[in-house]
Image (tube, rainbow, N blue to C red; front, side):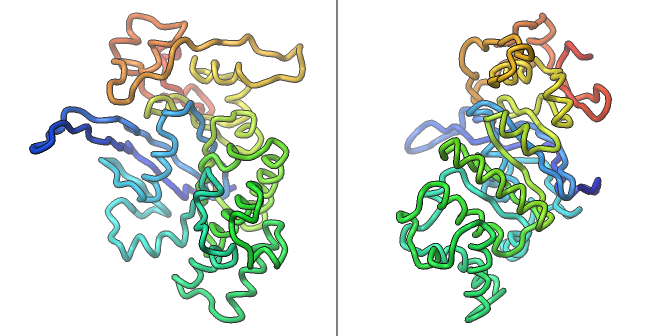
Length: 324
C-alpha cells in the first residue's frame, strides 16, 4: 500500500430535490443523501465504508463513479478533478474505475452469455478482438475460479456466487485501478461469502488493486479493510485504521455497531448497545449532531452544534462533542 492518494474526496454533496405540484412543480425540500463527505483512498489499500441502510453509502459510490451527478464538492482521481468531466473524458476514466454491484443477478444482462458480458467492455474500448478477445475472457474466468465452459452459459444457469464471480471478472476486464465493491457479498450464502472475499483479496494482491469496500457487515469489513470509515445519515462520523477503530471506537454510533458483532470468545464480548428507533429521514435530518436523537451520551450541545471531523491522534478522525 502506498501513501499516495489515488482518490481524494472533498466536501462531497448529493441532494435529491423533493418537488410538489403537477402543472407547476416546485422544490419544497431535498433528500440529503450525501452531505459534506471528505476522505482519501491510498493506492493499494482497502477502505471499508460501513453504516446502516439509508446512511448514503451506495449513493456515495454512484456519485464517485459519476453515475449520479454531484450537487457540489470535489472528487479527484490521480490528482485530476473528475466531476466536471465531459462524456469522452468519463469514458476514458471508466477504464480506471469499475464497480462490483450488490445483486449479482440484476447486474448481468439475462440475454448475454457470461463470455459476452465480460467481453463487452473489451470490445467497447478496442482492447482486444478475435482470438485475443476469447483468450482474455478465458483468462478472466480462470482468475475468478470458473471454467472455460462458463463463457457459453447465461446468468440464470449460475448460482449466486458464480454470478458474482462473473461480475468481478467483468469489472477487471479493462484493468481498473480502483474497484468500488457495493455490498458484494450481502446477497450470498455465508459459505459463499468467504469464497468471494478471499477471491477479492487474492486479486488485489495479484493485480495491485485499490478497493472501496461498502458493507453493513462489520465482521467482513474488519477482515478485508486497512482503514474504515463510518457513515451515518449522509455524513462520516469516524475514520481510522481498522485495527484501532475496532479495538477502541470513539464515536457512540461506531460503538453501537461494533457491539452487534457476534463474538465467539465470551470473555471478550462487548457490552451490547441497543440503538432506539430508526435512522431519521435524510429529508429532515436532526439539527446539530445527526446521531444525537439515538445517542445515550447526548448533551444539550449535541442538538445545537454540528461536530466536525477532528484528529483524535494517530490519524483517527471522529466527529463527536464527547471527544472535543
